Image (cartoon, rainbow, N blue to C red; front, side, top):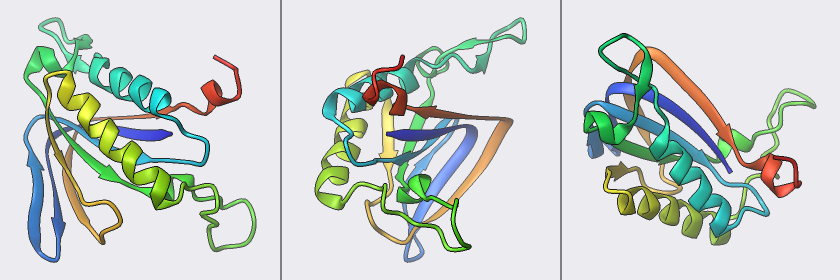
Length: 153
């Protein structure tokens, strides 16, 4: 499972011109699911994202979490995070999980964030979406659970 976490001052997602999710200060999380991902990996990644201390404190140090600043989360599914561009010029998405695995894990990820007391908005899995954001910092992190599936931590 892979998450691109962007600290934003605002973000929104539109489907067919309609805003379906919108947040103020917080995280835009682009979430990709791969074959072999599990509910346990999903829980781990949601907890990791929720606990990231990447908001600045009064001393200008990245030391505050979403809860500390009253931040919100916008989660958008993005299978292209598992695109393989190593051969040719057109990416292969064979590593991306099929919807029967990806949808339940995407929904669980959102639920896990909500269970931690966060306000969460979301895009619609599989839809053609337009995502707008103002990246704050900019601060962008890539979190990945691949090392956990192979036994390397």
